[in-house]
Amino acid sequence: MPHDPRSALLAAATTPQTWDILVIGGGASGLGTAVEAATRGHRTLLLEGHDYAKGTSSRSTKLVHGGVRYLAQGNVSLVREALRERGLLRKNAPHLVHDLGFLVPAYDWWAGPFYGIGLKLYDLLAGKLNLGSSKYLDKTEALARTSTLKPDGLRGGILYFDGQFDDARLAITLLRTFEDHGGVALNYAPVVGLIQEEGKVVGARFRDAETGHEHEVRARAVVNATGVWVDDIRRMEKPDAEPMLSPSQGVHVVVDRHFLPGDNAIMIPRTDDGRVLFAVPWHGSVVIGTTDTPVPQASFEPRPLEEEIAFILSTAGRYLSPAPTKSDVRSVYVGLRPLVKSEQTDGAGSTASLSRDHIIRISDGGLITLTGGKWTTYRRMGEDTINRAEPLAGLAQRLTVTPGLHLHGWSEEPRDDHWRVYGSDAAQVQSLPGAGTPLHPDLPYTEAELRWGVRFEGARTVEDLLARRTRALLLNARASSETAPRAAAILAEELGRDAAWAELQTQLYQDLARGYQLPS
Image 1 (cartoon, rainbow, N blue to C red):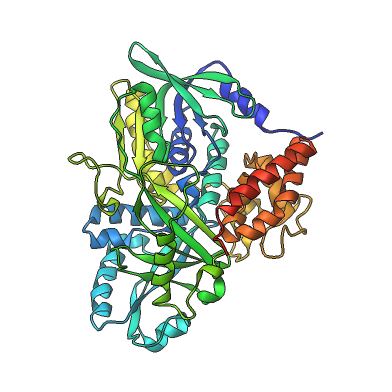
Image 2: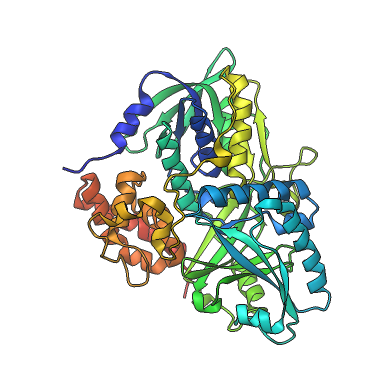
């Protein structure tokens, strides 16, 4: 008989008790906060309304970085903090984070010295956690590293180093780390209201999305870490709360690896809209992005604008030969940034100027809202939040242990295949049925990984499996759609569902995957 692991998690989440910390939101900030709380010994519950990293946290540029652009803006403190966190994450999750060389091509006489000086400062700010020293390359060396750069007018380039990771896999790793330290997490458990007594927030009501039943949970501190949706939770306490965020969207396209062979990424330091553009090798493909477009409101499946796609492809085409076209795009994905409005303005104008720092606000009723920030600084965001939560909730104030905490699956085994993201769990995944059965000729994954995702990583839908436990949707949306029926059959077998349920799951996923493909 199949065993559904969710029943035990639901029972643990709803056992009558008062939690020390309740975290609402299962993205980078929520998971980081939950791990911070649990590793300090606080009884912690995390509730996620959809799936872990369903939103922005699975749709990044896949970089663990200090932020070269923020250095150009003069935000030295943000860059220094991010570079420190980059170094810590590299040590704490070597199976998920690796060093990557970035080439800044120089086509103007001044570009080499100008960017070279800036990137030397970047090296200095990283201190002893630096990944490698930046250096100038002449034209021959630049083309040897990145053969598809347009040679006409190329003078050389600057090579510097940053980190790369798999964002959704880091989210799942944090989930497993949280559980390893006694935390309880439940996805598909949207919070529908806050419990308030004598003007204080003392818990929340959530709905089990799979049964429709509602439950109450109580906690000494409630943390709202729902990313671009933090204002929705804030209005559960105070319906007229002024919005904190002015979201923007960032679009990425994924193309074949032959557009960027070799081991380096490209960073274009100044595009027409004043941003940087990256072309980054990732899981055998190339991710190119991103944009920064204000959006009026958040949505769970944001869609790219035609002009955003055109901007990315045209900008990449100025530097790459051959230039990628719409017909080369295997997948397009969109992430929303939770940008914090200025206290002095209404948030109007360019989102490029809004804060990328994280911010913590505590309401009159004690609701702790954490928002802003980026994946690289997830750990620091969690540390700062629990530092604020402990005295507020009357909890013992304890020192953080996360700067040196090895995350679940920690392994330094030097492997370059797709099994690397499982770290020390890889052998167990490969012991499951289907480890030798590929899901699709154009994807690197096997059937065993889907079974692992259901049994040990909280996957409940085909989308969970193909978008976040594996990255099939982002690597090749068409191929992932073709494998959906088999994925649904495995999921149904693992959870004890019938054929009609599997058919519905297939249809839902294929409808979703169409939104990640460009019209031919």
